[in-house]
Image 1: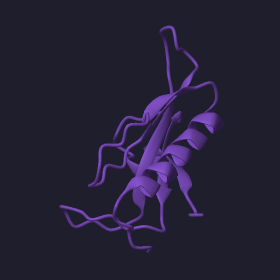
Image 2: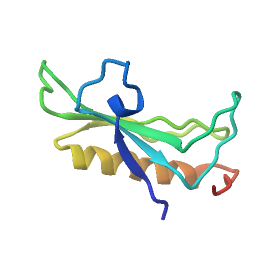
Image 3: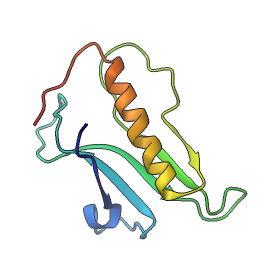
Length: 108
């Protein structure tokens, strides 16, 4: 399994105005094709805590990878009651998504 890791979004984008409830997931072991030259580990998803409204306190998650291949019919975003559960969903969906792609992507 890949060594996916998390960083606070405000540490990745210090001028982005993110608070300490926003996190980004990275996969250092794969490289996806790009339209623009870029270095660094692949961003695979995000989690953040919802503030206000009926879902206040819930954790929103999204798997953000989009690769060529057939349409992916499973959910790529949702909410969970805890940050840990939301993070696990990002990783679970990401790994399943990669398994459905017709092309395998090189390991870093």
